[in-house]
Length: 246
Image (cartoon, rainbow, N blue to C red; front, side, top):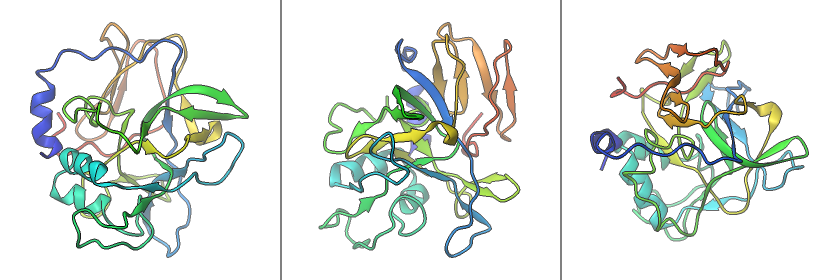
């Protein structure tokens, strides 16, 4: 079921609890770099390492059938086609794209999507350990509960960034979503993200941020304009709001 259809279900669910005490929240930087081959609007991604002190990407992640099923549920047709693409964002090595469940499975790179929220549970060596799902077992996840609108800190929305900082959707205005999964641990350098002010119980809904009392701290309109409340502020822009965003 496409996320646009799931969204109508999500609004009938009970309010989600805030991020548990003891966890930090942050948003991934939007960083432009010259890609190979050069792209005017390149995918906005940051390497995620498997160790706190490593500058390199972590272990590649096999994309098994249960992951494809989840990605199919939270994406429309165009978004699903994008997350299955080769050499553009999540998957860089060739595989049999004609097969619904390729064997051997393709492998996704360990990256963080620019402009995406995330939760971390540890700080070490100027890096943060990212909370994510284990790639082997998604059995406890309900796509109606864990998706970009309801839990954007656990499901990223793809975007591109131009040299002038303009944020766009990939392809022809595609809304595409990727579940935050890992084979080992995922770490991100502190200088590749913006950490939220401490002392707040954060809640998320798509582009928006709230405190534990459901009071807005940041809302984003359909055009992507951020509005801040109660003195709270961040400086990083998120992805392009989806077509159904209100």
